[in-house]
Image (tube, rainbow, N blue to C red):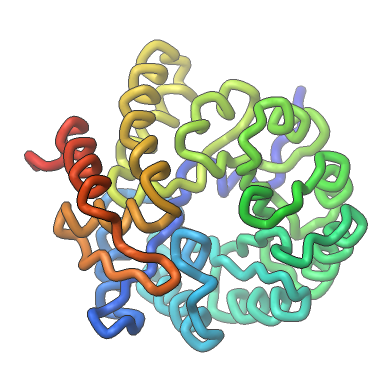
Length: 300
């Protein structure tokens, strides 16, 4: 019998939540609460605030903490919260993770240190220090396209032996690497790319931290459900339908520009971004509208 994964309660769908801003560019906490309530009504099992999709690089320390606290308080135990608390400074990641733990988050999402590009030994030391300092369940986040460093499977295997580390959001885009993670660790492996959710499931992944889940969480949950139930033809059909949507939501501009624009088109936000992110151009916006229409969202 295979060993159960450590982070099984974080399997399934986690939505990488956007951070709403008002027209003045300030965090709109009223709208943030409304978004959380919408996800509760949709049945979304887990939210990940203040990650890449939440524009965490542009938030002040106070805003970062207040967004986490607002999401936790509004969720009130009705869904889980996997708070983004990573940093390229280990001390800052520990401080944020301790805050999330005090605030009542269910887990923390720990992105690999970015820009300073540590060695594999440095990556291990970074995550081990956080695990030593904080008891909250921790989900590693590997996204080398943004951080400049891949967390190699050998390093993840070592980290998987540390108690608080229970899962990994894998966004390197490699089925081989994902297979190695499943083979070498008992972590819950989550896709970090919506377009690769089904392929990752096929090699042992157990869910996704999803951007497209900001607008169609029930469809993502249905994909996971039909695959787990063994309905592979239906799972492939749903994957291909979602893939066409994800291609534009993730390919027209850096995340979260397209998803915030889509939410604005669907009357679920104002689409305001913080510099250095800028709005979609007219041609890309027209393409996005067609994509949403083809999916069937504009008639709802």
